[in-house]
Amino acid sequence: MQQLRGQFEVEPRYYSDKAGEIDFVLQNGTEIIPIEAKGGEDKSAPSFKRYIANRHPEHAIRFSKRGYRKDGAITNIPLYLAGKTKELL
Image 1 (cartoon, helix red, strand yellow):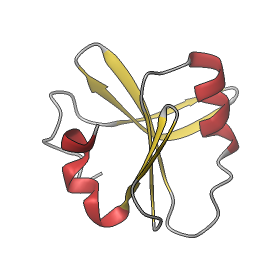
Image 2: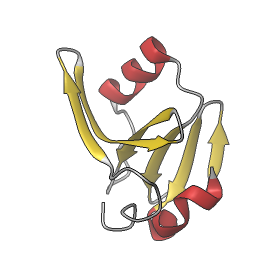
Image 3: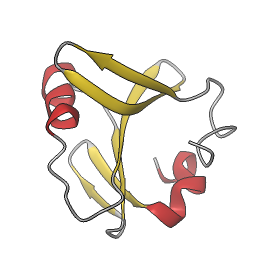
Image 4: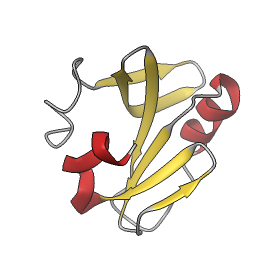
């Protein structure tokens, strides 16, 4: 969260509903971007995937140890590049 603060006009927020929880959501203009932060190698994230399937966001971000990669709506950003998130969208 520290790396995300100040990059966007609205502070990142935690999100949860009956279907699960999302680590953070960001607002970029009028777009809401879900974010999943993974410290380990497990990338299952069922709540994150369910959110994307139900809401169809233009962008979704996963922070992990893996390299930078775009896979449809999901952009995987290595943890060390979290401070460059807005530039990498």
